[in-house]
Each structure stands twice: as C-alpha cells, then as structure tokens.
Figure 1 (spheres, rainbow, N blue to C red):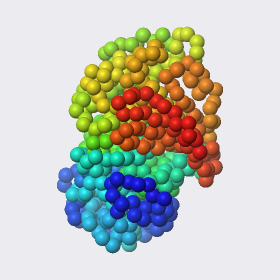
Figure 2 (tube, rainbow, N blue to C red):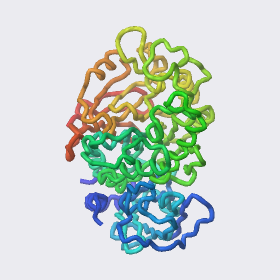
Figure 3 (cartoon, helix red, strand yellow):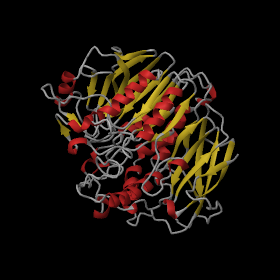
Figure 4 (cartoon, rainbow, N blue to C red):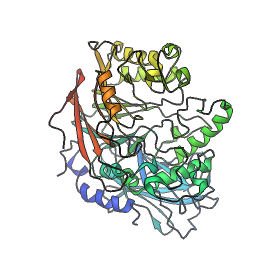
Length: 544
C-alpha cells in the first residue's frame, strides 16, 4: 500500500506499477527547459543520430531537485566500452529530444525541447528544467533518431516555506563493480524514496581482477587497468553505470551526488596523490580527467561542471521547512592526511589547528548556512565518518588518519559551530566505511558524559567488502572501545531515512549476500533521534 504522503495524492497515484515498469526499462527494454551543454554557444539544432545501435545503454537519471526544477541526464553510448572513450559515437553533435509529463504514459506532456549531445562532454545531456511545480512527481524521457530512452521518474521538493509532514530519502555509497551485484539498488528502486544522496565512491579506480571476480565478466586489459586519462575514466563510469539495478534506482528517484576518493585516486587529498613523490601538477591533470568524466556521467547542474581539475560539489538543497541538506566535499580542499595516512597512534600532526578537512572557505560557507537555515533539521551529506573511532581497547588510541579523526581541530570547529550558532537538530549522514555505524557525536569523545551535539548515521556499502557479516570482530572491537558508537553491521545495503517535524529515523537495510544476484533485503536496525533532544534511541521493534 502506498504511504500517506503529504505532498498530495496525485503524486503517488500509480507509483507501484510505474516503478515496476521503469525497472524493466532500465534493465534494457526498450514548456521550457534550459540545457547545460557545458559551453555557451552550443546549438540545440544538432544533427540526428546516425547510429543504428541503441544509444541509451546507460539509462537515464535526474538530480539536484529544486522546488521549481530538476536536472535530467542521459548519455549516448551505443558502444559504452569503446576503448577510445567515445561510447561508439562519432565526433559530432547529436540532437536529443526530451519530454516531461505528469504521467508515465506521457498523455500530458508539460515540458519539452531539444538539447545537443556533444563530443566535448562524451555525448552526455544535462537538461535543467525550470518552471515546474513544487512537491510534484514528474516523468521524463529522451529520444534521438528512431530510439527512445527508458522512462524516468523524478520529484521536486516542496516550496521553501512549505510545512512538510514527512520526507523519505536514501543514503548510498561505495559500489565496487567487481565486488558483487547491485542488489541494494534494485530494492532501493522499489522503496518509494523522495531523493537519494550518494556520498561517494560511485566508481573505483583500482585495477579490475582479470576474472571479474563475482561478476565473472571478461574485460579487455585496457578497461581493467587503473584509469588515468579521460577515456579511461569515461569507460570506468560506463562499466559501473551499465548495471541494470543501478539504472533502475536512478530512474526511480532523483539523486544528489558528491564524491569521495575512488572517483579519482584512493585517499587523495587536494593536489596530493597517494602515489608518493608524484608531482602535484601531474596529479591535477589526472584529477581534471576524473572530474570531467564524473560530470559527464551523473545528473549534475552546470555550476558543478569542472574547470580543469577544479569542481565545486558543496551546495545546499532544501525540503520546505522540514530539512536543509548541506552537501560537503571532503576531498578537494582538505590538507594531506596526517602522519603519512593509514592507522596511527600518538599523531601530533592531526591536532594542528591550521589543518582542515573542508578548506576554510567551505567551512565558512557551511557554518553560515547552518546558522541561517530555517528548517527543523540540518543534514550534512558527508563522505568519511566524523565520529571518533578508536580501533582497539588498548592505549594509546589507534585512529584512521583519512577520516575526521585525522583532522581533530576541524571537527572541533564544526561542533563549536553547532553549539555557538544554535544550529537546529544537526544530523550527519556519512559513507566510506563499508559498514553501518550509528554514533552520538560528543563535544568530548573521551568523556562519555560529555554533551551530545549531533548524531551520525554512517551507511554501509552497496558492494564494497563483498558479502560481509552481521557483526564481525572489527565491529565488536569498535563497539567495545567507543561507547558513543551504538551500532555496527558489516553487511551490504543502504540507509532509508524518514524525517518528520518530531523525529529523524534511520532504517539500516542489509542483504545477506551480493556475491550472487537476487538477495532479499531486511531492516537490521532502526534508530531514532528526536527534534530538540540530540541523542540516539534504538527502536527495538524494527528488525524484520
């Protein structure tokens, strides 16, 4: 039965049938808008598609929803893994028709137009549709030549002044393609979510095993090698994006994306590569290629289009008076990891107040945004865990230098902003750790009686870490060493968040395996924090 949604009954009518149909389409079955072509003089009157092969192999997506609009995405790639990175497309512009309707049969088309798919952007299309109504469900599709794309469903947030009784959003991260099947995304596509936040590691840049590991797919060496060039990164995105379950999730709800490290290079920091001694100028060339491919393959708006190696991914989204989302970039502007990265004890460098995780400009933007947000809940969409995570019960404490533990003064400044600026109900959602982890964020983690200033819900991976376990030895150790950490689980899955004016609830969904397709999903645990009373409560009736 469809949930009771305060955005209006018309927005949920026929949704279950639509989700099923979109899932099949994503598996490979066959007004006014502004296009973000990536340069100012592109013309919409490009030539029609000459290819005789189906071009919408990577599906469709929408993203960064606003009360009056959304960005629609697709990429033409009849041969998605062509070694030159062009997706089987010729070096010329192609005209793509887009349509948006109130119903998925497109009986009432309310917006439409043409946009060019240009070789400079890998023949991707980013259409920024404006003039939509807030709090409405819409359907969209693309056409070029004789071919029609799958149908996608998207949704605009309510007006910024609207009183919203409920918001449901997903949290996902870490989806190494060869580590298993994207079963979590198939379930997410059926979960009736209003929006999904992807917190990084959308692709992995590591060398792919020759046997494809769980996917058992033979790939050319050029595709398996670690990506360095634009063509390499385009193909790595195409490989990951070709998965039908991921396409189904994208077609079912708008996504909001920010990156972590594997979109470029494992544990990179600013201009610093993990490759010791690499010239920062050389790394910026690689980062430029990675950023370009990231933009080309995801539903991002024109302000997120990179300029060379630089891209601005931190931004704000609002859902009425209920929630403001502060989307962070914890990679681009951070200082290098303290004490040589990895797990360290007694690392004095991590205590240096001149070091920053976000960069001081982003810190200022965030603190001002938190202070002036008028919503009941302030949600930080963050890459790596903020909570202190002692990795054993002995002294001294071993800590991960890549997470906020390696940037303690930056974390202290954030917590100080929470309290001094009277930030309403701060909640952090994070990724990276390949495990569910739920934590009270303490003003002083070394004092269990210290005030709780916020809560953090860290989501597990979609596939990274392979099948995982319900509670492994690492999880038990962390729980014993960190009384502020209330829950851990190392199975694969995602988080479903339900926010109301009274409380914020996290459902931690898990699959028993990803090494073979078709796993069921269940809610392993549910936690709640109440508005005006920071701190976590376990819902003991939640496990299914």
